[in-house]
Length: 157
Image 1 (tube, rainbow, N blue to C red):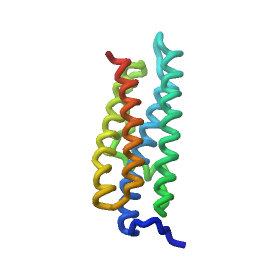
Image 2 (image 1 turned 135 degrees about the horizontal axis):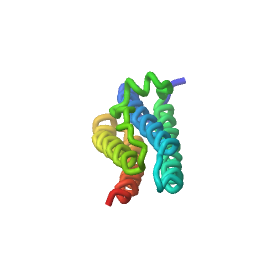
Image 3 (image 1 turned 60 degrees about the horizontal axis):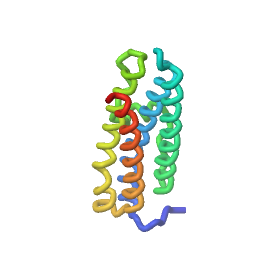
């Protein structure tokens, strides 16, 4: 049975392709945040271990929501590491330092990159593809990432 939600198949496919890239970015960001949680060292270890845990838990929920939005549009979400690495705008590499400030700086840059990608899709999803629901949805995601960047940035000031 087809997906009949008032958006053409061509438009739903175009939006699903962009959401798949976003899901890949979210997965790489989640993995890098897990890495920070597992491998942070230093006198602030305990506090930062818990801090990064809170961040990856939020990202886990975001990933699930993006995948479910892709499914809502009638398409399958990418779900392999190979697919994620082919689709992501981010790099999985880190600078190799395991102190909290290094992790925070890297994660902050990645969140900012995700924000820019999301911001670039809000208008096209609504105006070009007539998918106001996904446009609204990613606007909320952008706000979530903006809050996460504010929290990360607060550790650097």
